[in-house]
Length: 350
Image 1 (cartoon, helix red, strand yellow):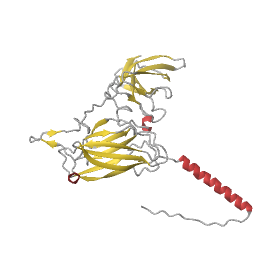
Image 2: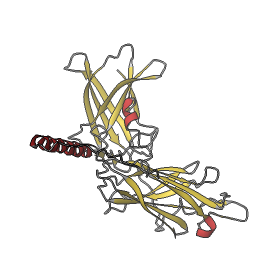
Image 3: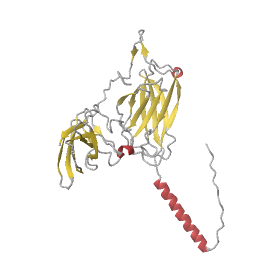
Image 4: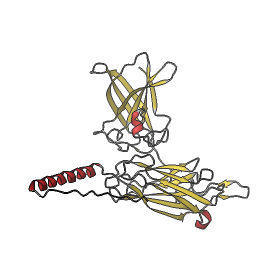
């Protein structure tokens, strides 16, 4: 670590009462300035406080305890990037338990990867100063894994959604000796047929868990005349046809709502983004949709259809500069993970 040196310059001060008064006034102003600077730069600071490893139900169990050592509350979700292996030799499946709070145990999620890299969205993102949360994941070493060691790399807030006072202490990486730690491997029969053990057939409690997910669709929409000149009035009905509640995470006043992107459709079927979107009311609409529940979004938009004869609506989707500021939580899928990501669109003649 580089040493820091502070240079101090000594100046003489007149001993008159006026000089003393001016000096005290200057110090008061300087102190107030520093206080304002500190207040304006208060930030969170996510660190990995502890990691543990153990065996559980013929699987390798690893835990990451994340703590906020900063002065500000972490009030937005963030992603923990986990890499197991060097890409050539890698772990391809994780079972993750990510509790939404200290009092709720949460459910398991199965995550697959082609190169041993996994992104886990931290659901318990309300972390005040000194508070912590723990992500636990289970895995087995694939039978085709040839290396005698397992490299790991844990990166907190890998998409930089949280503003932190120190962005250089979010990473923890190293190497485990597989034989010395007696890490669990997949087993093979004499015919060399791989047995993919408990990752997809059981949980650490030996109780099978089938993950339930929401599924958002555009049930219908209408376009009528608006009372505002040059605008059209839109009504869009969103429905959750899935088996779980669709929750929007409040990352800001905009992203705590459900959004619908508007497109024009050409005669050849190609679409053009209208650079317009609709969102549910920030203040009066609950940010969740229960299974089989509907939500209607209404909005007047300054829009001209020109020569287009059809428009398309797509729920849980936004394009443009907004997503460059707050990227999708699930790339190519939006902000909500659904059981079917291919039925979010609805096209209609106008």
